[in-house]
Length: 312
Ligand code: UDP
Ligand code: MG
Image (cartoon, rainbow, N blue to C red):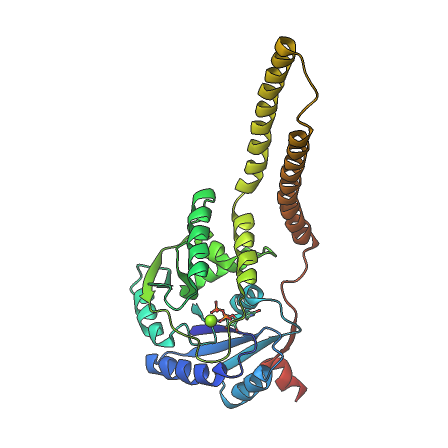
């Protein structure tokens, strides 16, 4: 069986389009399938639409969260509840063409790969500065962490059961899927894919949200920022030592008229700034450790097609 997981957050316009398209493609494949929608606390008509689809079509299932938990949690819930031997995850906005599914399935069934993922060939239609930061991010994270991230990788892939189990077994609270997909390993085949426009609605990712997501990625998969703090500290200590020697020698040689308080203040502020910055880095790691130790659930399900049926 094939499971297709679709996280949805306020996708009332695209959902009917997506449902039609995916159903057409999956019936074309001719294997049993389930369409698992995860409603991530939408405030529009998404949930009623899902209820209707599930009532009309036995292949449609849905999980509805009690509030917005974020796309990462929605994907995680989908992975935990999917029952297929092959599991796909795709966006609700048709930016991930369902027409690619048969090709992905074919590649998996060839037995050579455990997962097939899509990556975009270019970043056309994206603001240039966003592309710039995205490139920088991939370069940086690939250098400082031991996971391999592929630039332009989309969260659109089809995986074997084994890989899904591996992903589910990574129960961390702060999830960064692109890193998790890379970390679990397995043989992945990359399919090139055009960058498509959203079918309807608008993106939920502002630049600021993406920026925070990138920081998450770095902190979750690398300890390098902590090393920056300690190396910076060592460097400053050496620098201070040499300056001290310089000043003592100058005092002995030339005497010392009182001067230079302005530069002293600058240096004090500079060092204070660096110290705060390094404390902040540590704080980021500690805050995440704190969240992990609480072991809160990743999401809370308020309703599924099952509970709704049982209630009548
Ligand atoms: N999404 C979600 N929860 C969120 C934000 C987004 O489940 O808090 C879903 C959204 O419905 C869509 C997918 O994640 O199916 C990708 O979102 P979007 O298209 O806004 O991101 P983009 O394609 O612009 O990166
Ligand atoms: Mg999108």
